Length: 274
Image 1 (cartoon, one colour):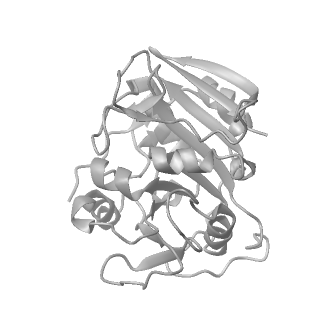
Image 2 (tube, helix red, strand yellow):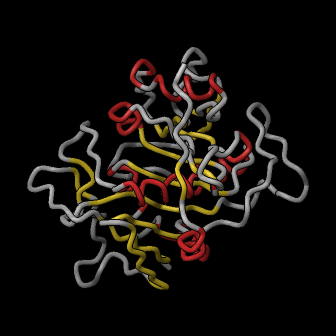
């Protein structure tokens, strides 16, 4: 069983600076084993999508594929846990899940003494369209759920894969998947997430997921972007966040309503992408 989580405090003035980029306040209708929703939360409403990650000055999120690389300082780490407490769900790709063995829970504390309870924990989703996940490399997700400090993880696989209930009980379909070049059918996936009660989701990585969501055809699904920029260069050979360019004559995306928030030695950029 994992140790009790160390609470992380995030100042109210910084919370206020991020408020324009966050989903509406969470409700408590998330259920672990049912897709039934109250009438006030129709399943046809797509979730608020917050794309968030930490990057170096040379736009890299890791020194190399499969290697966990710490970029955020303590202040921006506390921000990440605050953001998690504000979202119904959190999503990472299989590679990130296996490399980092993340807990995908929130250690944010309102008072600096106790982390938020289960009702304010995000539901973890691991995106694995080809169903290659090795659950022995992601034990922390189940440990946190068993300890009551996180929600049970869900598995996202493509429509063509058979469900293997010996991995995780809860499964969501990602629609058809032909490979990384064509990418994820985000509209189908977001609709399927909405059908389980998810009204807001925080997408944390890794680079394959981020770059796919930043493709021109997928940017319309992004509600806000919150990026932590660390004062470091990782150098050649790292894992880069840079979406494929769809038009050689113009930028792939430019953010609007941008706000810069210094946090310790890092700086956080928040903005809208459309």
